[in-house]
Each structure stands twice: as C-alpha cells, then as structure tokens.
Image (cartoon, rainbow, N blue to C red; front, top):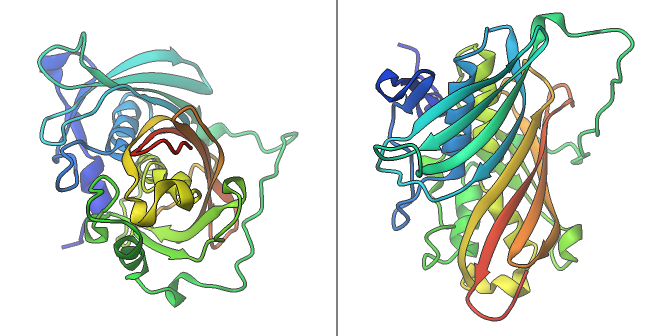
Amino acid sequence: MTQKAPVEALLAVIPAPDFGADTYVNVEPLPFQQGVPFASGASLMGQSAMAAAATVPDAFQIYSMQSAFLRAVNGADKVYYHVERTSNGQTFCSRTVRATQGDSDSDACAYQTTVCFQRNDKLPDRNVLDYHVPMPHVGGLQPEGISKEKLQEGMDANISRSVPLLHISAKDEPFEWRPFDSPRGVDPTEFWERSFVRSPVFLSARPHLHQAALAWLSDTYTLGTALNANPDKVGKQLRNVAMGATLTNNVSFHEPMTKVDDWMLGERATSWGANGRAVITQRFWDVKSGRLVMSGTQEIVVRLRDDAKL
C-alpha cells in the first residue's frame, strides 16, 4: 500500500453541510506543540486552500492568497471553513474563506483569506512578460550533503525549552528541511536564512494539493527569521521572546504545476521591524528548473520580555 505524505493527511477537509453550504471541516486534528494549545497558521492556510479549491473546476489553479489571522485557534477543536464564491469568470475566479470555531460563526472568525484562481488550461504563451528572480548560487551545495538532523540540532542549540512556542520537534514536521549557514553579526535587513525543503513522501498528483502544501509551507518557521536576525534583542536561545504570532501572510504561487515532493530552495529575510511588529519576505525556487515557484510577505507580532524592541 502506498504511503500517504504526512502533509496530505493534515491538509484534508470534508464537507460540513450542517454548518451551511460550501462549509468544510478538518479531518485530522490540527497539530500543536506541547505546552502551546494553539494551532499554527500553517494549518489554517493549507486547509483553507483545500476548502476553496473544492468549489472551483479542476482547471482553475491557485495563484495567490491574502490572509489575516484574527484570533488564536485551539488545536484540539474542529475548525469550520466557510467558503464564499466571491467571483466567477472565464479566466479568473476568487473565493473568500472564513475559519471559525464553536457553534456560532458570527463572532468566532479566527482567520480569513482571499484565494485567487486562474484557469490553467488557457494560459497565454505569446506577448506576455516572462521573468523571475534567479535562484541563489549556493556553490554546488546539494540537499543530500546536509544532515537530516541539522534542523533539530539547530533548534536544540539555539532555542530554549522555556520558549515552547518556538521549540518545535522536527520529527512532527511534515516537510523535510535541510538548512544551511546564514550570515551572523550583520544588520537585520542584511540577514537571510536558506534551506532546501520538500515533502519526503510523494503527494497525490492533484495540483491543488501541492499548492495547499505550499501555503502550509509559507507559514512554517517563518517567524524565526526576524528573531534570528536580532540576536542582541531576543537574547541567548531566544529567552527574551515572550510571544510571537502571524498577523498577515500574503503569498503568490508562480508555477501551477509545482511539485512539493521535489526539492525546493527557500530564502527568507526581514525588511522591517518596529512597533512590536516585523515583516518577513520569502522566496522558494524549484531546484531542478531554477524557476521561482512561490514568493510572499508575512507580518508578525513579537513581544519581548524587557524594554528591547524590534
């Protein structure tokens, strides 16, 4: 029997007609960390993408998501995804998804996203703009040359267990990350983090599934980029971090047939931090083709334990 990719099970949603038309609910419990009962934004983004995709023809593929995280989600409770068919066109369509918990959806909206689709079987191939930021040169480094344990080793060495929000067990991560060295001792805006990443198990061939997996990926470990760029502010092993959460996450998907079970190269940086918030930019390329497959901007809230500010 073929093994199902872990992220595929985590993304699964099914119709919940008792809660209204075009309403879906998660199949598996949302993963959360020990000591932190709240689910990550990755779950909400990925499952919302799957719920929205269930209401469009297969020929339409996701090209962007604009997300706002409004309140914490209890990982032990069901999440209901209410899909509004915002627009329908011959080439483009969009869906608005509201994620709620509890018996009433009037006051319990925890997350909202606009998911935009383009028809993939009629893409123009003449008289179009065609360019992308090239994949960084990494000196011939290959993911197989980086230890599978490097991610966990880095978290164990650099994140105190007194910060459960950030101390994550890599064994529960549905993606395989192979991080490599980032510059240290530089201005925060000159800092970057790079990693090879893929699903270690093949996903089904459905393009929507791969795009939803990319949405999940876009909100995984992202917050850490701003923290790692400010070592003097966050303290040794991030002990000065009181809390952190995603406020908004806007991502664009550039290659509709991207396969997340192939190796990708991700790069993240931070362009701004003030007023208790910070902005993180991210790009992911397909390693084989060198094509840019996803880019985005995430805004986070960060609270530190003393008067230091990002």
